[in-house]
Length: 224
Image 1 (cartoon, rainbow, N blue to C red):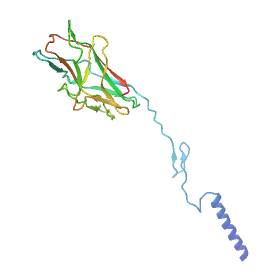
Image 2 (cartoon, rainbow, N blue to C red; image 1 turned 45 degrees about the vertical axis):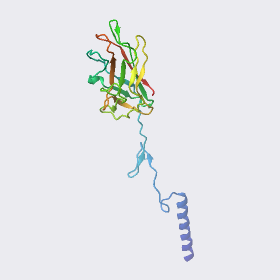
Image 3 (spheres, rainbow, N blue to C red; image 1 turned 180 degrees about the horizontal axis):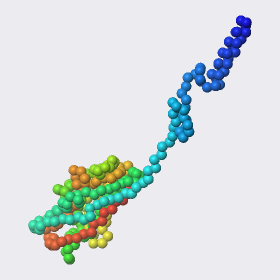
Image 4 (tube, rainbow, N blue to C red; image 1 turned 90 degrees about the vertical axis):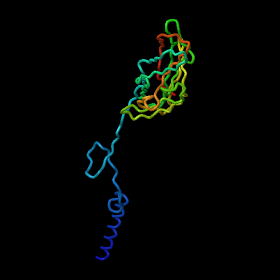
């Protein structure tokens, strides 16, 4: 009987070792069960994994500018620099909803200021800067995020003041604001901060009195 008991114990031990080696670490080796895929019945205390997918489509790149610009002054015998002081004209809104991070820039051009047969000079008449108090200011218009938008503010490299040379036909557009790649994302009010957009007209003392008109063209273009 003693010999039989020894053999029985040996067989039980061998079986336990075999079970630990082949049959997973239930008794001899501890471990953590892997999560199952969600969508099937999962036992209590067992987790499952799934994939969440967000499909975000690209939107447009848009510019919302003033509907008009206006200046007013009285002839005093001296050269004058006149600024548009209308509050709604001191900013414009760029909405980069493309999500591309390509950057963008705003251009402006203007035709010759004309009243009857009289005109203002094409060179040196129109200037834009980030100031409504100084035509020679080197300040850039301050950008801020539109209300309700968590934007990425632009990195503007345009040098101010910017001269816009007018022409009777096909005036040349010039960049009046720009943003480097990977900036300027979301809805942004250019001139909405401490430095507004200043639109200036320089009027020489020799200018004839009258109501001058000019056609301005603003455009938003993708890329710095």
